[in-house]
Amino acid sequence: MNKRRGMSLIELLIALSIVAVLSIAITALLQAGARTSAYLRDTGEAQNEVELAVRRIVHNVRNCASLTVPSGTSAGTTFSVVTQADPANNMATYNITYTLATLPNGTRELQETDPRYGTSSLIGDVQSFSVRTQYATTPVVVLFTISAGRQGATPINRTFRVTPRNMN
Image 1 (tube, helix red, strand yellow):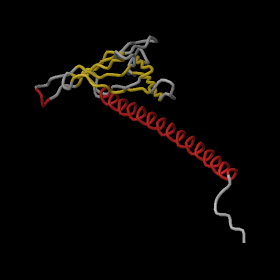
Image 2 (cartoon, helix red, strand yellow):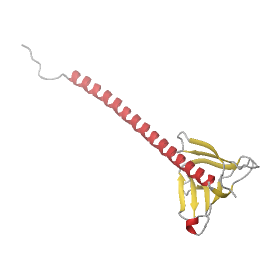
Image 3 (cartoon, one colour):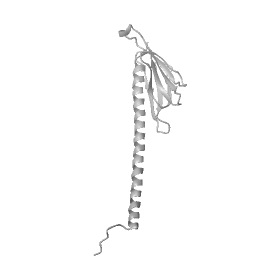
Image 4 (cartoon, one colour):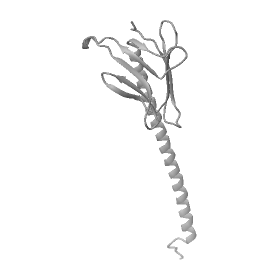
């Protein structure tokens, strides 16, 4: 009987070629998965930041005593609201300002400045932010447009209108 105990050089080279092709395919699959994961993470973070900022802005504008917003068709990147008098704090009011700020590294973020809490970053990697009044007459309607997300990624865009309820 003729029993072969080993592999020939040709068989070994074919086996190595198959393993190499499979390794390349698996590596490409893992890299694609990592890119997809990073894209979904970045998009999810941008979406969460935008939604939380929208809620905060809507709440403050709806409940403000007064506001300063660019009017007409020329939109601005800064606006401020004055809160209702706080009965728990000697009827104090607070001027809250929202500004599109450019950081030293060139990225832009939407910042909220509240004298009670200082300056906070609401949204990082803002591509654009604009605010203006929609109508020149009452009721006052404020129109906001936000676009955020990392450069090169699909931006998260939100346009929303807010009508203050409690303006004096």
